[in-house]
Structures are given as C-alpha cells and as structure tokens.
Length: 499
Image (cartoon, rainbow, N blue to C red; front, top):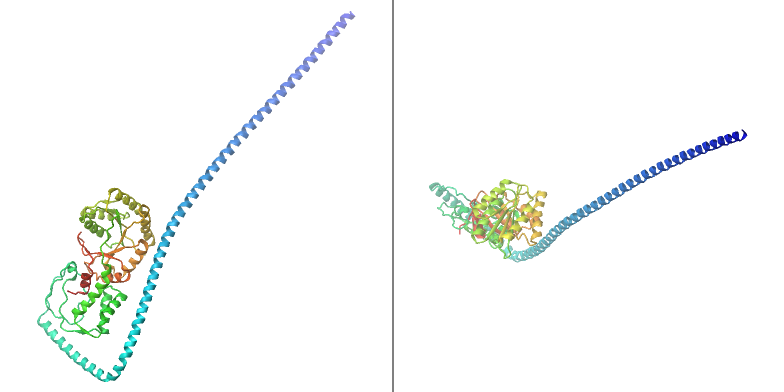
C-alpha cells in the first residue's frame, strides 16, 4: 500500500511537474510570439519610415532639379534680354555718333563759312572806308554844285514821271487791257508791277515751265532808279513769295552790286532778279543719279499729303520708259487706302508693287522687298513710307528703323533718300528738310504742287540754305507731269520774266 501511495504520489508529482512544464512552455511560447509581434511591428515601422524618407528624398531631388532648371532658364532669358538690349543700344549709339559727327562737320563748315564771310565783310568794309575817304575830298569841293544838280535832276525826274504817268493813264483809258482766261497751271510772278507798264498784247512763254508763267511781262515805258526804296520793295516781294528774309536780302544785295543808283527798266530789273535766282539754283539742279550696283534702293519720305505716292508712280514710269526694271514697296502699311493708291499708280506705270497686310511692320516689309528685288534682278527698288509729321519723334523713329533694317541686308542702302515737299507749305518746308535730313540722310528733293497757287520761292531758300539736289518738280496730276528741274526756266517763271 505504501508503494502504491508512493507511486501515486510520484505520478501526481510527475503530472504536476508536467503541467508546470507545459505552463512554462506556453508562457515561453506566448513570450516568443509577443516578441515576434513586437519585432514585426518594429520592422513595419522601420519600413514605413524608410519609405517616407525615400519619398521625401525624391521630392527634394525633384524640387532641386526644378529649381535648377528654373534658375538656368531665368539666366538664359536674362542673358538674351541683355544681349538684345546691348545690340539695340549699340545701334542707337552708332546712330547717335553718326548724327553727332554730321552735326560736328556741319558746325565746322558753318563756322568756316562764317569766318570766310566775316573776313569778306571786313575786307569789303575796309575797301568801302578807303573809297569813302578818297571820295570825301572831291565831294567836299563839289558838294554845293552836286547838291544843286541833284535837286534839279530830281525836279526834272519828278516832272517826267508825272507826265509819263498822266500819259499812261490816258493810254489805259483809251485802250483798256484785254482779259485772258486763266491757265490751269500758273506760278504767280513775284514782281509784275514794279514800275509803270503799257498794255501791249503779250504772248505765252514757251518751254517746260511755260504753263507755269501764264503771260509774259508787259513792256515798260519808264525807268526807275535802283535805290534803297526800290530794293526794299524787291525784298518785300521776294519775302511774300516764300523766299525768306536771308535769301531775299542776298538776292537784292547782289542785284544792287555795281548798279545802285542807276535807272533800270522793269525788264532789266526782272532779268537781274531772274539771273540771280538762277545762279543760286544752278548748283542744285541735278537729276536723280543712277548707280551700277543693283538693286538701287530709293527711299521716299515726306509729311502727309506732300505727294509721295504720285511722285513714286511718275518716277517709276520714267525709269521703266528708260529701260530699267523697277519694283515698288508699299511701305505705308498703316493705311489700306495708301496701298491701294500705290497699286493704281503701279498699274499705270506697269511696275509691280509689293504689299503686306495692314499693320505689318514697315521695316520688315522693306527688308523683304529688298530680298525680293535682289532675287528678281531689279534695277531699282522704290520704297514708299507712311506720311509723318516732322515733330512726331515716335513716327520719325519708325523711319530711322527702316533705314537700320535695310542696312542689315545692304550696308550701303538706301542709295537715295528723296524728300517730297509740298510747295504750298511755304517756309515750313525748311524745318521739314532739317528734321528729315537728321533722321534719314536726305540726298535730294522733289517739289510738288507747283501747278496751283504756290509761289515757289521757298525752293530758292532751300537751295540757298541746304544745297541739296533738286531732281524734279511736279506740275500736275498726270503720270507725265513730273518735269526735270531747270533753274533758268524756274527763275523766269518765279519773277515773270520772258527772255
């Protein structure tokens, strides 16, 4: 029994030990499971943190790459803008330098001319003083006799003039002058009534400008002394003919040289005046030059309404008749009507007209037209430009841009820059020439609308002040109404003298 109890007790002890071992094993299993769960959770946390770090690193890299690309793009844009600004500044600086050089040359020439003139005036004054001193002695001896003789001569002259005036009035009453129909084109003479005239029937003056003159000067019946009063009248007549004060004084001073105090007929006075005007105009009467290099670029400029389009059409017709291949560029791209008008003139002249859509940059059109003229083998390319006022700096800068752009294609272009002037603008033409010459280097002039009421004297002032070539004058609206400038015929027409 004792052995059985001992066995049972041993078995119970063994079962208890087995149960304790099982509990310990379960406890260890649960601990290991818990440890594995902790390790898995820690690994998941580490993986998530690693993925987040990788994503953040990728975002930072992408942002840095984008920032670098933006920076490079900004730097390239800034560099391009700087290059463009530098190029434009260089062009403007070159233009300014060229203008300043021209102004300096003109200033030096003006100063040199002023010094020469001053020396001439000083020499003339000295000669006059010497002559006056030499004549003073003889005048002192004969002063009384000369005064009495002069008074007697004046009385006799007054009597003769009074008698001639009365006789002329009688002739006019007995034979009233005929009325003649006015001509379509008339350049009003500046000196038709200097002295008494008869009413003899007159004939029309022949020649290219004959229709500008109307009737020839009537014959004179008396003579007048070329004294201060007469010179003052002549100066006023020339000034009212738009010749300007300086030029009018120069003309009358030259007329009086060696003739002051002499009695002259109206024909003699008009001849003197016409000869002096022709002498001023002779050096500038030159046709438009043609050069062997082709295409020869002719830029036509002027203010609104001056007659640029009609002048281009007339010149193109003349050049084509001379066997030249001409192309016209309609550079007034701001007005559709201007392009249409130029196309009409191109059809009349039988010359192609290159156009662009309204609003196109005129400098771009001029550049394309030059390329087209070079490909087609044209002899002349005539570029029309938009009418512009000389006191609008923005519009004048557009004209300067045209010149800069075509010089990129041909550095010698434009070979001619024609300024078209309206004769009816009078003295305003002087300021137009000055401003356009500064911007586009005017090489020659064309004067239009001399077929109306224009007096035309401003052409003499332009020749006297600027010395620019005068290529032609417009005397009508027909395609052949563009005449070469003839200084003698113009002078005769201006003063009403019939040679």
